Length: 228
Image (tube, rainbow, N blue to C red):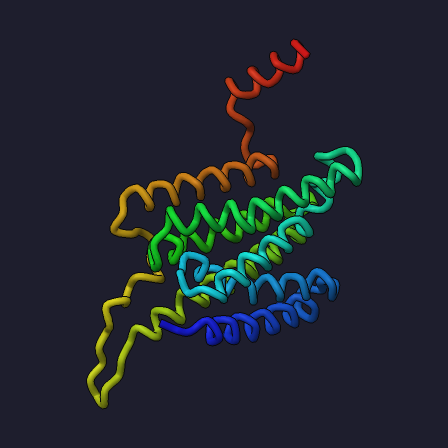
């Protein structure tokens, strides 16, 4: 298994290349392109959130806790209705990610479980897409794809490091196949992962107008609005 520094080094290099491609090939403004490159680098270490390796995990959760309110800044202003309320929501988001999410993730995941999988990479990308404040799909797609690329680079590196070459003999260690996967040995974890992926995909399709909302749910919301 590749080390934290190797994963970060590879994903940072990938992020720099992705940033350059976004600017020169796709005409993206430098600031959004650099943000996408930074998220690509971050994606390369996200799978390590299910690890018990200590300091790197604590630093990663701390960084995510600080980054989350910034990504949600515009939405928090809308939700709160005032700057003061937005600040309070931002503090709540920080505390939830820094302590609540960290506590939950440590207890519901195992290292190299479904958190190390292709569906997990898609979930990370879709979360970034959903929290992006703009309504136009293209500016939201650039950072989301970056996170997916970084996350996937981590999985590929773990699989490459599971190959051991001794002269002309090639062997696979016990971790082979445990990173770049679609399913795990735990039916519950696999089912939960795919349900979450389906829910996020539905939310994106609903937000972009690809599909209409569930009829009975829309009717219930309209009735509630009339009551108020």
